[in-house]
Image 1: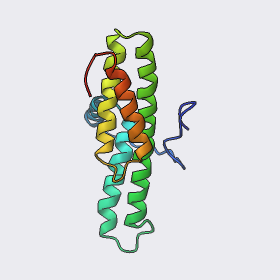
Image 2 (image 1 turned 45 degrees about the horizontal axis):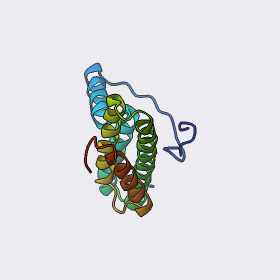
Image 3 (image 1 turned 90 degrees about the vertical axis):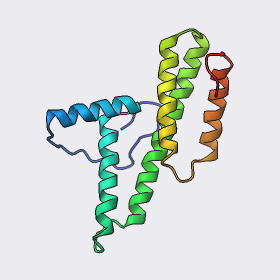
Length: 147
């Protein structure tokens, strides 16, 4: 389930429960905040990283490494699409309120998030890169920062 009007982040989600120490949870929250994402996304990424490492040493595993990499790529791609959609919406808000520092701060945080995701995707789709470039050019028209 995603937010209305957005593509879902997962294609076949499964809810799990985990108990961790308060210190670990607070650290996860801080990392998520710094990366402009959710604790759930940080945990999913950590699980995918763990599974990738573990499945290298277990030949009879039912999920092979290429499937795992494809799943990770798909999750990253959906995160990138959602982030670009968010930046686009925030850019429209900036059009209406060009001197709103709060909106600009949110845009910059999401640009950092998109950059982080782009560093992890092997072949980002050209249409997403084009859309992101277009939004950044539009924001730059306001003279608030340069791309």
